[in-house]
Image (tube, rainbow, N blue to C red; front, side, top):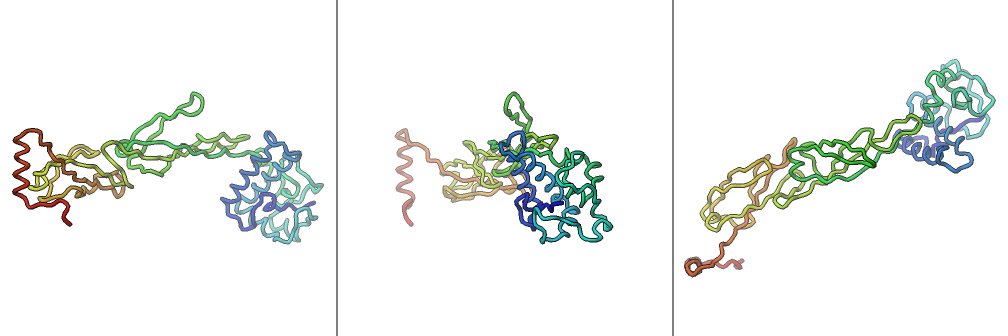
Length: 302
């Protein structure tokens, strides 16, 4: 009976992580699946991959397999160490080589883990099933939907559509997971998941940076100079803020907790923009002339 190097079959090192083993199995299983592969030995390779993955994905079976050590080579005649069967690791049965048609596993596998295991687990079908690929798509979300939360209808290929819940407080770069909506599995394997990568889109009024929201508010020169209360539109409705006297254009005022919701919530930053009234009439022009002569003000002075 030939020794099977399951690590070599999956193309991974003996210290490979569970995630690396799964990733390599999925890649090679797609390559050698008999329904799509043109390789002459695709069916054999596919079975070997399924058997190798069945062992290495399971911590207990992998530990038992690793006890054989790294001294064996693929294809080398394999004789289980003395006491291996009595230790509960194997059930040395048919040793003619190749794959057992009843279980779908090789004799090497059954010598290690027992034919009864593979038959009771339905191993032939289990080993060769393949989970579907996860998929990623992009979705734009308005800043108002990111603040309030929303429900969107997402149309997939064909006529299929899904209701997608946009959670409150979601930010650019976050992903929404739709379980089972990725690529279909093979031979009973689970479907993959669909991940929607979110981009929060600013609108004409509000700008988002992280969880903080920025808004411009126009104020009159006398409001800036004297200090007055002015209304400010937020994503949660209108509030009133007190402008400090002698405020300049570009001054920012922070409203804590008025940004995107979360733990903690973001803040709202109000950017003051002084709007200058037009001088359309002679009276208005005269007023500006009086201001010019009254105020010793040079806007370009450093």
